[in-house]
Length: 211
Image (tube, rainbow, N blue to C red):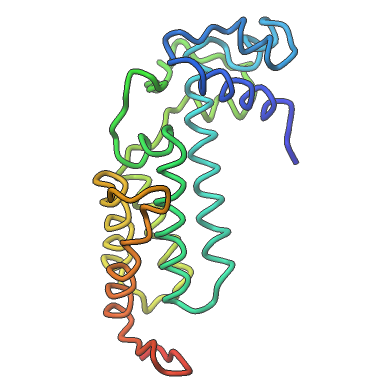
């Protein structure tokens, strides 16, 4: 269920949709959220703290989505194909997520560093203390998704094969197809071929039996 903190972050995302991060002011975020500016400072500590919270929020939302997509299907080919396609769609639609996954940050986006230990506030909300640790590097995020894919497939799934699938999806984020808005669709045959090779599955059979 959305929390008061979620509402503040939603307001910040709304302002960020219209303005580059350097032009975003805490007073504007507070106005959109319908709270005082002091409320923002109490929750996030500073504008830089708000930036870290936005990045952490986007990271957590993506990983929850990964878990949801993996849980929605039981067939291994369908599961991983759905995850790679969904990742590309999400990254195309969300610039902050795209930056997290690729490491390609622009001046329009908040790109915060972890808070220095001496600037961290012990009384800050637990969610902010976690955000102040800083965002994961792209390789770390890929590793998390890889391990969750492997866990969903079972112990027989090769670790490197899972990472290959994640990185193949990200290649379509970094170098997109020309077709829009469904520019992720041309990757489907390639991804399907890779997944079928990994699993040695004959998808023409009425039953897809793992070896």
